[in-house]
Length: 496
Ligand SMILES: [Zn+2]
Ligand SMILES: [Zn+2]
Ligand SMILES: [Zn+2]
Ligand SMILES: [Zn+2]
Ligand SMILES: [Zn+2]
Image 1: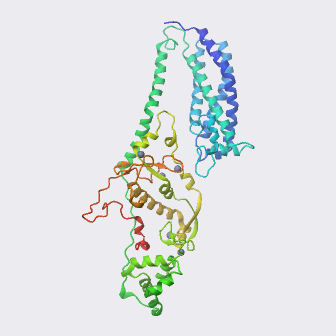
Image 2: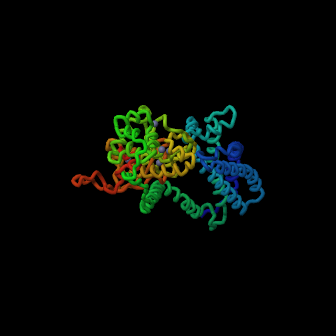
Image 3: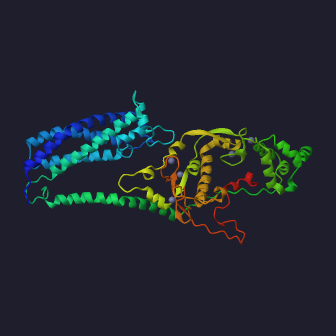
């Protein structure tokens, strides 16, 4: 085995340090500028932006400034003390490289990899109505566009990668510098190759296996949720109203005789809102019996709904599903409902398509990288146009009202995962390959607004197999499946 040359080691390190010094100098100043900008404006580090922005900028800044100082100090020290000291210099270089590697790796999750991608800086990783990270950062500087800001963040990152390569080379040459023939740290010993193998092989293995392990990890989480099972959501069903005819006293016979005649009641209803009719029926037992007769309840509800409220703007209250129109609703200021967002935006994807969306390699891309963060937009308060009854509840305690509504949405999302309640008897299909989604499989959800995976637990992890309908028995569908729409449990909708 050849003996290593001490002169060669020193020469290599000096040349590398000489080449590195200008790059590391530019990096240190650029990183300082970015770090100070992020530190001054904490809006840049709050959701929806990456939570590690400040830490990652700080690590690259601290690493590069220390490396800049160390380049001069290491250069001088190497000329004064050689021999075993070179090993310790190598360790310092290794530590500096590791600090910068951690910083740069964290930055990679919110910065584009190349300067060319800065053309899309305005729309880079945008969530809802929030401006992109670069647009927001540019707004703090006068006469700067998002594109310029993107350049000033990406360029230091690229320089950082160059400096890391230099540092790793210097550290390698420094640590494996022992000139003794049988030393473990002799650069010509197979041990050096062994170390390369120890660090290199896991990297290559990770690139190849990381996709499967990521998929398996997420699949295990879904299966664990499936095994734990879905807690059944119970809703209180209102008891059917059975009037006690003996106890009914008629206080105003003339008025009630008008209500009893449907031809007279319906024109009156056409000038009222549905909510007014309910309030009218609550005035006395006899009036209730005239307006909503127990014997003809379902037909009467349907007719009264058709006649009451303004025809053009008829809809249902978002919270209790009672019929309302533009004139009888009131605006309550409340945060958005997560359930509405999931129901409108999240679509299922089959396991095959989901696996394909995870690209091989360490770096995460597309659906795999972008977890849906649209929940951030739920927090902003908006006007909810709701019925007077719910408006009163909202003013008292909207958290309770919304929690109850979210439970219903959760149930509705479970039904949706089973393919229940789709329009035109359609089957639930994969958003990518359009094949039918059968029961008995794991459900993956992708948000159609941000194209990230939605991992919210409001979506069920799994859809069970539904029993085929037994038409001979006159079954409409699966007996214990959620075939009855949740809307039916509201008292004022039983006539639907
Ligand atoms: Zn109305
Ligand atoms: Zn309501
Ligand atoms: Zn969702
Ligand atoms: Zn989303
Ligand atoms: Zn598919």
